[in-house]
Image (cartoon, rainbow, N blue to C red; front, side, top):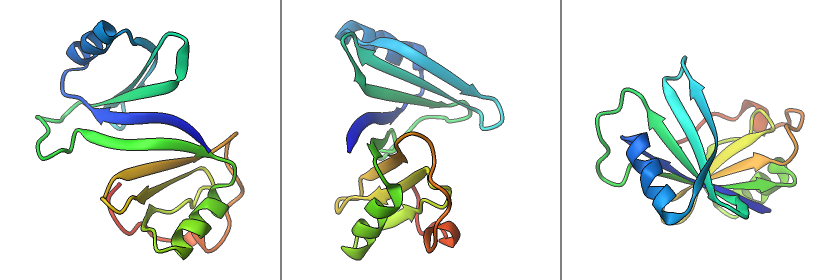
Length: 138
């Protein structure tokens, strides 16, 4: 397993980027999604580009309350199905199953959202995950 990023929802991307730049982080890449009306901005400290902060700006959002600005922690895994099988067998909540063989979201015992991403693309769909419904928010 490899740590990928921690996601934070932000209301003012420019101000947040300035803050992280003061800490020494630099923008690595950005992705604007017109259809979804959001922007993803990835930052990291020079020389440590693998440990990233993902800033998510939802264009229509009017401010976050109650901790909703913290999004998730992400890890790349060798086999997303094996990891989800092991977690489910041990009582872990799988909020977004790996139907596509690429991404899943699970919850820690404290309700922290963890994103799992398949290393090197996607695996072919596999049951029972391919037809599993979402069971919670992620």
